[in-house]
Image (cartoon, rainbow, N blue to C red):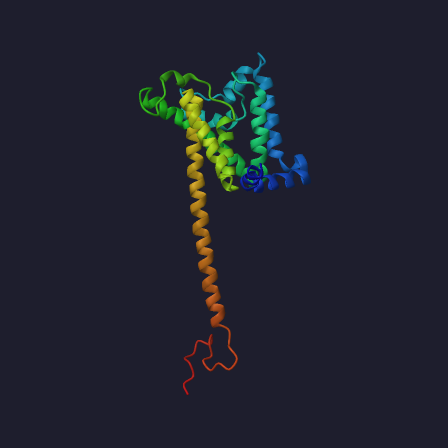
Length: 254
């Protein structure tokens, strides 16, 4: 039991402390974007279940692979908050509240939205590529999937979960989410499952880019500090020194 508790602290300790402190201090004010996203999702669910609002929501946020690309790109941001008609809305609301909320506290609201959009967009674009490959290709899709309405926050939730877990050192959690998505495709091979894998690949590339950027940035900062340290030492005159370091003149010859 102690080993399990120790592992949990190492895996989620930093993530837990970060989220807990922010929520205790500011409560819902720490996650304004998440609260807005939950309200927007609930509102869209209410509207699309009304006879007068269904077509409006479809026109604004329903994405299909058969749609023109420009139209799909316009609808993709809002499609993230349109609950899938064949799934219970409370599932989407809980996903957004938990995953978006933790992400907003840990990495900020604008990074949360960017990663959510990248993951969702990766799934949207993959659907077109998969259908063009055909059902018999390893990563292909049947042509009937072109008519499937592609909405909901699931791809964004998967991408955010993996990114935040990676950034906060919860590598086992990130790996578990990835394995679960692979298992989903193996058990039930459908459009949603493959889009989740596309979202994971996009976020994986983003994680790699961030890691490379941080590594090169840290290396550059270390080189600058070392160079600055050498210049500072050269500019300091030691007591009893006859060389006049930092003057720019040749050393004094005796």
